[in-house]
Image (tube, rainbow, N blue to C red; front, top):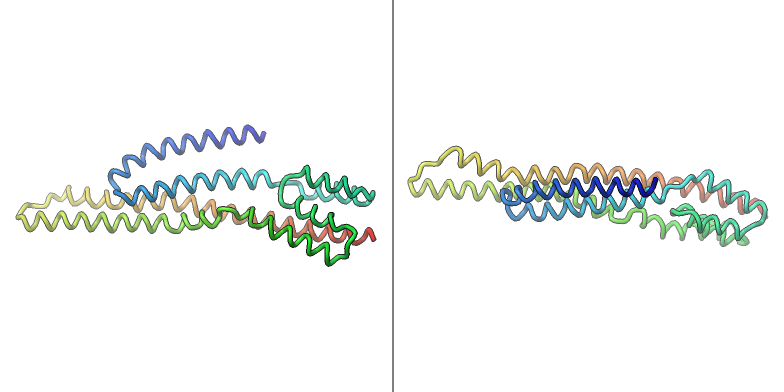
Length: 228
């Protein structure tokens, strides 16, 4: 199932990149240098989205089942078995629980501190690259606006030059210059909207994982302290 998911994501990404590159080549010629920056933003955003989706998918575990297995091992005083369960389970929840179990013979406060220290290491890994994705979502429309403004300036400079040379200005030329200038705004929004949606999706997923970690940590502390 996991391999199929990766293959599907890879295929979708390849198709999107191929289509994106085809249209981007045409749009770069029309939109100017700013389109190169927007293109780089789109490639970076796609890479971050795929990496975060796979990472968060891999970090999802059944915390209730994990907690039941660890609780059973601890009640039987099989500390090593509980540690092995954590090692065999992917994701940050298992890691913070392992940190707590490693202090099984200490007081409640020391167990909590060990879990908190592990959490401080695991949470940044869940939030990896989300700041970059948010930055892309914010600057892409601004780059698009910059491209539009510079394109409009160029268009009106051409109009001024023709007017000074006593050449009539063809309305079609003016219209072409305007829509070519607006291409960068469209491109910026095309990159920004899905990036912003993906950012909010990942933030919600991370918040959900952190909540599961906190609940599991409290349950683990209670189990460890009740053993004494």
